Amino acid sequence: MPSFKFQQTIEQLEKRKGGYYHLIVKADVVNQFEKKRATRLKCVVEDNLSFSCGLNHYGDGNFYIILSTGNLKLLGKNLHDSVSFEIFEDPNPLGVEMPEALEALLAQDENAAEIFDNLTDGKKRSLIHLIRKLKNVETQIQKALSFLAEQKLKSR
Image 1 (cartoon, rainbow, N blue to C red):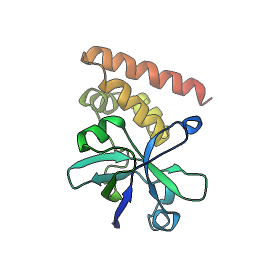
Image 2 (image 1 turned 180 degrees about the vertical axis):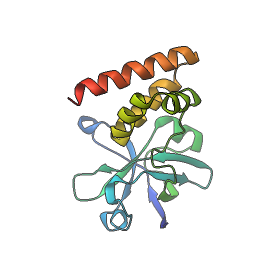
Image 3 (image 1 turned 45 degrees about the vertical axis):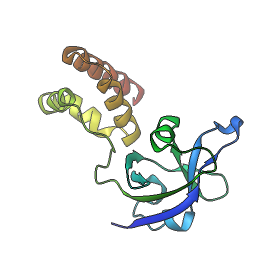
Image 4 (image 1 turned 120 degrees about the vertical axis):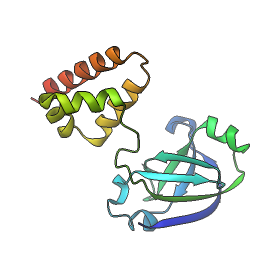
């Protein structure tokens, strides 16, 4: 599994393009990953902040990783500050942990499992993030079933 280390300054996209703080990853680096730009990554910044991320097109053939304002605060960094960071393929293909309630639902309901398996990784992540926000297990299961039923209707 390739790993790459960089030292660069924190940049910001134009406001009309989202205004995200970001770190640039060159195309030749991205092309060394098995799934190229579809790779889920782990990013470790300044050896103390680790997060899962994806690659976004920069527009010139290169890519970028978004740094949230919250992560900048945790690092004590600002726009144009220099940071060291390392990227490597995330061993979890979804880049997020599966909630217990969803795992149990998919193990017990073959229909739900089949729909889930046919979703794109992005849709799977959306469902997982949606469920993780909910505290009540019953509500998590209801929301998961509703989401999966909606996806099944869209796929017809």
